[in-house]
Amino acid sequence: MNIDKKANYTLINSDEKDFTVFFKVFSEKINDLENEHLVIYFSENINTGNKDFLLFLDIAEQIKENGISFVIVCSYLNSDDFSESINIVPTLLEAEDILEMEAIERELGF
Image (cartoon, rainbow, N blue to C red; front, side):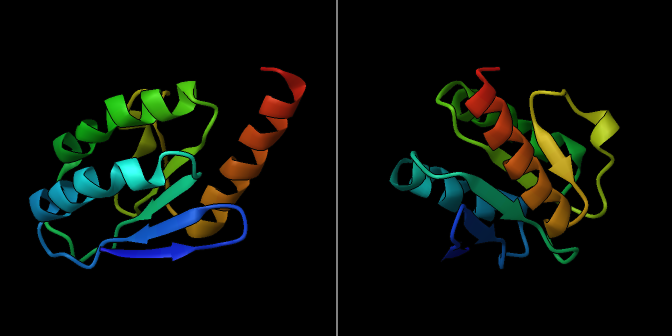
């Protein structure tokens, strides 16, 4: 797992080939990133399926309750297969758009 701090968010790249290994490492590091907007980027090389991403559902809901954004970038997932409480987009540019929209919503009190 690679962690890259950007100006407005922290980008986490999965360099593991197995989702279970990535999720274990991520779970160990999540407390160190608790006050940061997170974007997790999954390459097509990781071995995973839709059910694996459901593990992020509770994390995404908790992060959003704390007024922080959480976005998953994965080009091979269909966001319609998941709850609206988790942001899944196909590109990093769309993830940055989500971060900006959520920041505006927070400023407006939504």
